[in-house]
Length: 149
Image (cartoon, rainbow, N blue to C red; front, side, top):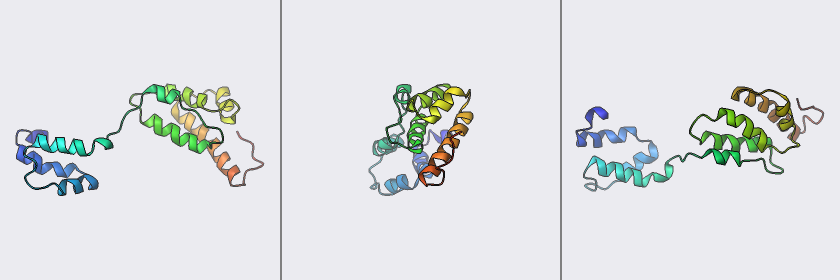
């Protein structure tokens, strides 16, 4: 579209090609002759879909996250990774520490992570997956005799 930026009529015609289904329904329902320029079109679009913008979270939100009493490891993981993915920037090194610190002090995974050198996200995720699998098996009644690694 940058090539045609001086041709507003063309910009308005090309605009819908970048829309998803929900935005396209909005576009199709615009009343005729209510938009007079490309700028008005983009302003109307922005006003309508302002709530769909992804808001980045500050590092402090990750630092304050912790596992709730009675919460499963899977539920904590889901909350943690959702928040981690909403952050802009590279906080992998911080994630290694904040994830562990968010676990209860008596949690087996925290103890294990304290004793092992985990230096990257892949190692952390592999370690977590082992514990998550054991927890899921225990919840299903299959792993009552299993020892957590």
